[in-house]
Amino acid sequence: MEFLAEYGVFLAKAVTIVIAIVITVAGVAAASSKGKHGSEGAIEVNKVNKRLDEMKETIEHEILDKDALKEMHKASKKEKKDDKKKKGASVDILPKKRMYVLDFDGDIKASDNEQLRNTVTAVLSIADPKNDEIVIRLESGGGMVHSYGLASAQLNRIRNKNIPLTVCVDKVAASGGYMMACVADKILASPFAVLGSIGVVAQIPNFNRLLKKSNIDVELLTAGEHKRTLTMFGENTDEGRSKFKHDLEDTHELFKSFVRDHRPVVDIAKVANGDVWFGKRALDVQLVDELKTSDEYITEACESLDVFEVSYKEKKSLQEKLGLSVSLGIDKAVTRLLSSVQNSRFMS
Image (cartoon, rainbow, N blue to C red):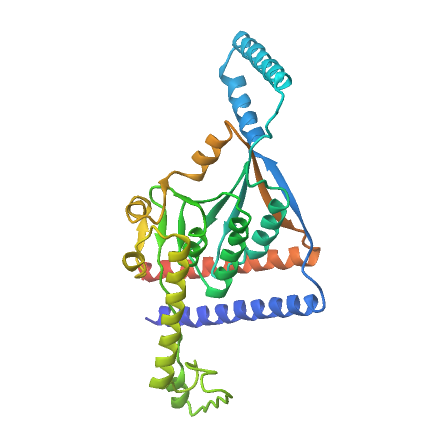
């Protein structure tokens, strides 16, 4: 027991130091960013067909002998030559159909919003409603309502331009993630992807009783009846709880209405209870249209379409890169620390 007590003191000191470092780094970053606009970035485009061809050629060179490779190259050249003749003989040459693949990896704040905004803007400047398709590889367990509302609005820009939109979910699109997914014309999911969670949740700690024991008073002054319903430090009232609950229910109704408008095939009364469904079960309740991984869908498209991955990369300054490195180092240190504490519990 004495060892555990000493270890607890050590842990408290270590955590305090880590928190102090985090606050210091955050303060320096905030001070240095005052008066500065966000870093400029650039659109990056990679042709998926080309990458797949290179992968195929690499394997062929390893498994085929020289004669087989020679024959294959001759057949390939003949095929390309025949294609050129067909195009030359055709009076009306149809434009090549394209697929644009965008990624959204969502956290609780939907931090990928800026990347999504820029990639959608770039693709909409060139995409043709008659020939093109936009695919979003979406991964998100949801988060803040207003942030995911904005992300969903970015996808709505694609629908408003009448460009076919497909969302691929390989792992999870729940809560705010599903709010985004339901905007699509078509939703594909892997067999064990998690979808749904059409609900709203809020959790607020309250330290009022602890503060009272320490003879600490908290004064909260507001102007407006509902400016603050629940508080972390003051004494919460039944009236405040009721108003907070009402706001949650209203948000849930807006969420359900949004899903109903964009995906009318869904029985909203059945699925809007906060539950989640794995891929096959999600197909049964029509939360998705087909079970298929994004890799399968995009690879198949490469047989008949030009497929391009489009991303937006921010240009970070040296200062920002150093800040990110420090932040990652702190994250790893905290993870190791918590892991060692967990292990010590079982060892004791």
